[in-house]
Image (cartoon, rainbow, N blue to C red):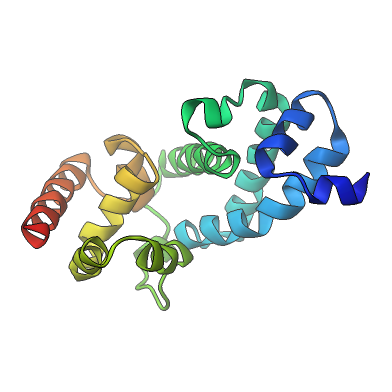
Length: 183
């Protein structure tokens, strides 16, 4: 049984999880949690918040596996999990930021490129990839949150610790810069 689960893709594991298959859920967790932890850590340096978001995310996956639409709607199981995690992270920031400033870790300069930036560089066409790499880091962060992660202006504002107007301005500047670079 264990070997058979190893041969299934993530979408099938979610479908089995929806039927209450704990072993399928454990296999899905084993495959996706390391990647998700890295992605969450790129957006939040507070290990406790990352751990809480990870737990909330997989609890939501277990409870809502039956609602996963999957390839029928053009989605993937990993994308679905990331959407849940990103929203849980924004919720955690909202709770935390209710009376406080954004955590100083979010303002720290990046030391290494994010894993998704490296993956994007290898999968996005040369012209688009070059245009993305030439964007100022603050514009790229807003574009990544809104376009790649699918967050709203408000969620991006909370995630990046910026006023909503600044997020809108940076998103507009990023789109203009990308349009100019592509023409």
